Image (tube, rainbow, N blue to C red; front, side, top):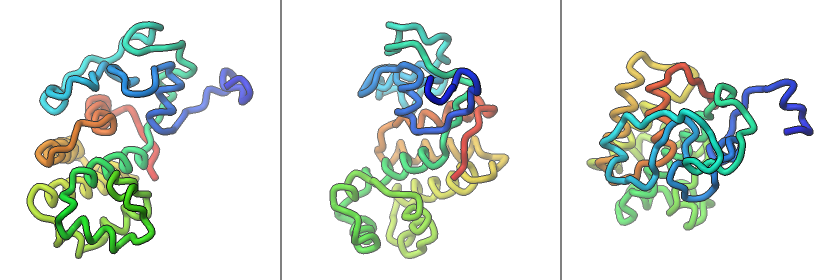
Length: 208
């Protein structure tokens, strides 16, 4: 940070949540309080989808709530990346898909160069996600809760994570969270980011 004279220019910073947590002095790894905006408890899984009013972080003091060191940037200078959130949501959707069904088998055929390990962990890149969103045959193969979650994901990508924000973006995000919960997906840090963005709409993000 000293080498780029950040104290002088104080640019906005857009990056992955792990990088942002590092800049805020938060502990790395599976920590209890891992989010820079609120006191979301990553270990209270029974509350993740039912509780929406997690208190905002009031301070970043060393030794309190997984704060390991002094923050290097101001919270107002952070811009969340829509692409990073999109990749995370895709990952959690694909991880809970039924691997015995035709839709998952189709993914192997659609992306033959994607390794089995990456496929099972849901590691996709932006162009691959855009291809799947436009693939009508993949839509037909999905059934039940998987189809509902995929449709919600597509709506959020088009109407919330792109270059425009729909007026009913809160409804779209709530529908996405409900469908992921019903599908059996764990509440991830990316999903938490969505809930906080809805509560604090002035916090912007960088589109892809």
